[in-house]
Image (cartoon, rainbow over all chains, first blue to last red; front, side, top):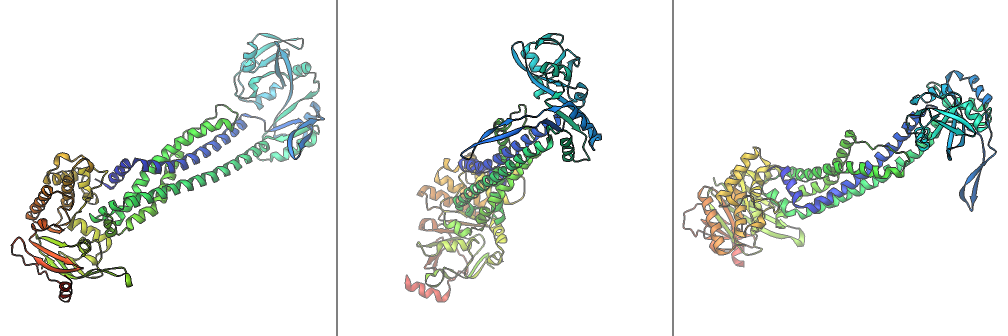
Length: 385
Length: 249
């Protein structure tokens, strides 16, 4: 018989109280883990997407927009007067002060075409530049020459086309030179052709829909390059992708702060539940504590028994709460990101952290009841017999 | 020198007009191996007497010595150790821990001492065997009778072989047959050398003791030697208090 045996047997006998104690800590840990795992997964999703995106500056046509409001309510907006990006404007990028930092410049001509009675997005690109901008691309077949196209895997499946097959686009017969291996990105849903071929088909001679720039900008500010490009491409709106991501990350930081706040409140409530339950338990066990004291248990022994109970329950709650939190995060994730395949991974360090957090919580909330129990005058306790 | 000495024990509860004088000056001595009974009406101070004897309740005045140890000069932790080493308690309402089996209940006093689990289990089973309950070691208290529960309480009190056993109304909740069994058990322990101090209402139970002290209104008012054995206890009530007590009887 040890103090741990006494604590364990008491918990086993008083199952309802132990369950209530467990629930208090479990709620706190589950909430903290779920919110933390969710924010971490969303952040990783954004970072992964950014890593997949070779370009770090985007140039899109400048537009005027009008936001519509009615009675102070925003109803979205309309875009008008879309300007054009001309190829010769893009060439000026090669002469900006930080031109040496431009690793690749990829103009893109985008437009919808009809193939086999289905609408497909055709993307005309410079394949030489694409090799730098999209180094992860793997082509089953070859890069398209003039009069050929490269199909994204989803397009190939939808149109039931394979390498070597031909298709009619706007009265022109094109041959499929290859199929892109699935990237998990939007490229899978596109049909690619050389820039000139696409411009011919789409009627966009000398013009492009957008351009991607890969800037090797480890030691130069991307903002500065954005500014320089904006000056030479007046018809384009130049965006540093990091800036776009930054906005989303800021939103995420707000969410994280909110998560922390909610976690703090849940932990506080959980701690109060533990405190109240433990106080009740100590009061209920006045007689038992009196017996322990009468048969020679020191005050520290009583504290130890109460705290061992708290540690056993809270450590179990920490472990259950960790897995509960991961499960909750996995269920909630689809509501926060459209990406599929985002994982909420098991992390032994986080699991240990959850157990340690729960244990500290349990001990902190039980310390006062344990002290009260130990301070009970054994004579008073026995008078209650 | 006597094994147990109580010197002018006074115990007050409360202050001012609410002052309650539970014990008003008690002197007595108990020899080692003595079977000693204390009788008195409800409210006479018996419970306070027993709690002071049990090193659980610091007297307002006086000294209480066991084996030469001035018990109430010990620190609270030392007093807890003293209780573990010197005293075994048998409570009126058994006070077994309901969620522990009989053997686990008996092992409780051993949780604070060193030694292997196997050795402790052996000691507990031996103690249960001594009270005739070795065969029910793994039952819960609710699964045995009141008399058996009292015997388990005795086993728990003696498992670590303390020199003194304090029994509070050990037959108070038992029928006459079971009471006789418990008294027989206490007599056996006394024959084995254990000093027994028993608080009781029952003249029949007190008849087993070599000496009986009577308490009234917080004072010792007399002593009897029903067993007829010759004991030199040095028991003496506080001189000035006796007269007052006798006047009140």
